[in-house]
Image 1 (tube, rainbow, N blue to C red):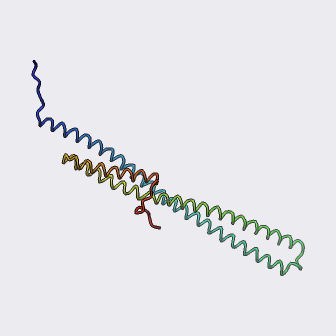
Image 2 (cartoon, rainbow, N blue to C red; image 1 turned 90 degrees about the horizontal axis):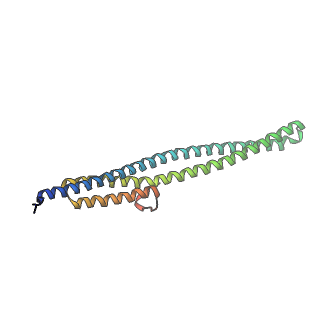
Image 3 (spheres, helix red, strand yellow; image 1 turned 90 degrees about the vertical axis):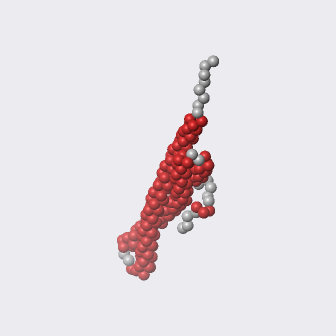
Amino acid sequence: MPEVELPKPEELEDLKNTGFTRRVALTTAVYAVLLALAALGGTKAMKEMLLTQQQASDQWAFYQAKVMREHADRLQQRRLEVDFIEHGPSLAPEVRQQYDAWLAALVTEANCYNVEQQASEQDARQLEREREVNRQQDPYFAFAAVLLQIAIVVASVAILATSRLLYGVSFVLAVCGTVLLLNGYTLVVTLPFFSVGH
């Protein structure tokens, strides 16, 4: 019967540690990918929040300009009406026609500004809603990134210490970070301590 050589206990321990190291290293690579997604989501949310804030401010400026123009036209309209009442009987027919045309133009223009300011207000409010969504997303991405970074560090220490306990802790941290990451994209759940004050 041929002799079978059994592996020595030290070799088995090395193989066992190599398998553990590979598993933790592969898991750490997955953590790093999740961390990149959290960083990407956070950067996007911040950029979108700033952009929509600027766009909303621009819309409110347009709104204010249209309100001022409408107000100026309404004042001019009233002034013409008062002038017409005061001087109307003594005006020549062609001057009366000019008054009427000017008055009609002012009314039309003021009405147009009113419609345009309503559209600007709706656009500004929509942009503010988009800004708020991005503002709500940002802390989820930030905390997800922190938890995933800690998970990577703990997993690295688990490799050095060959500690399954530390590997388990890193996994729990990564799961929590992943849940926050997914919620950052979907906002399915709103956590009260993540609410951003206004």
